[in-house]
Image 1 (cartoon, helix red, strand yellow):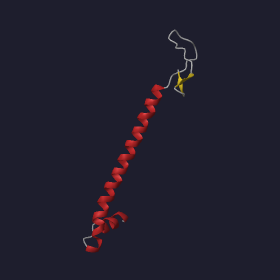
Image 2: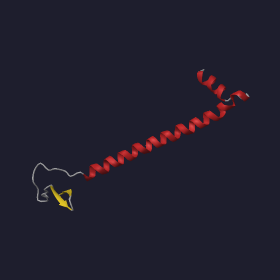
Image 3: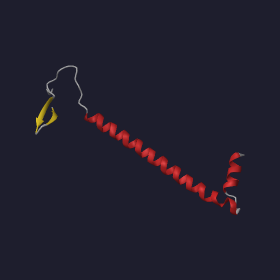
Image 4: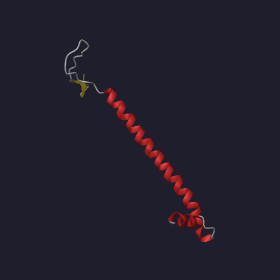
Length: 85
């Protein structure tokens, strides 16, 4: 019943209700664009998180023949300090 009333108001051919014929499709287009942009932002954040997770080094609990010994230090070059691995 509510949908029938809303559809009747939205499609009313009277001149004073003409703005509804423009507002309804326009609001649907805006809603779809917002939904698509939100979905693309969430997908972009998911890809970024996966890329960051792939770049993080994995610490082993037991030594293996392929271990890499890394020491974090600071280096000073032209008065600026940089982290060096």
